[in-house]
Length: 246
Image (cartoon, rainbow, N blue to C red; front, side):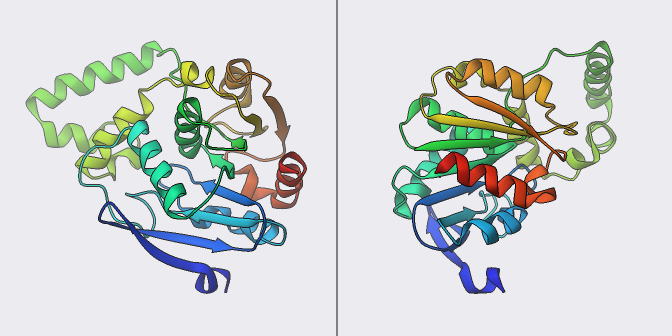
């Protein structure tokens, strides 16, 4: 099996990090989404390892890597990713970043000339205008939390959010409340924004177009599929990635 052959564990800052690395050639680094893991890129790694050296790892707090013991921001994850790149000896790799992974890639690329090319898919990182319904829900949550904090934590927010540990909830709030459009404006590396036309989590006509405007010279392309279009249509995605990376 691909994973059994290529997985290893490394240690960074006292945390064990699960890493998948295979193939040879130019480096491609994969950064997964929130509550996801490196395995989400299985078919992309399997297709691209024939031409590139592909590396994917589980962020701390996800997959088979160590949990986080304090609330991490996007900047914390970006700093960790920089250490990972140095530890693994990846020199200006291409990067494929999905959803939350795109937040990390954008933050890192806004301050460092660290990637030779960046492919963002289902990229998140902008704070949208809050609806009246959302504001009303937040007000209700805060009111209930004063009287019954445990009830509030267990009954407000998405089911996904309620399953998180207290530390991960705090980290999640930091992450989703940071708008990265200004960071995106400082990016200089070649960037392809590849979004699924049926993506309802990060619609191309919101996030995709916003980042396309913010990142100078970036290309925005739409393909079949939803938020995980890279896994739904791996052959099309891999072809687009190989053409872009060259």
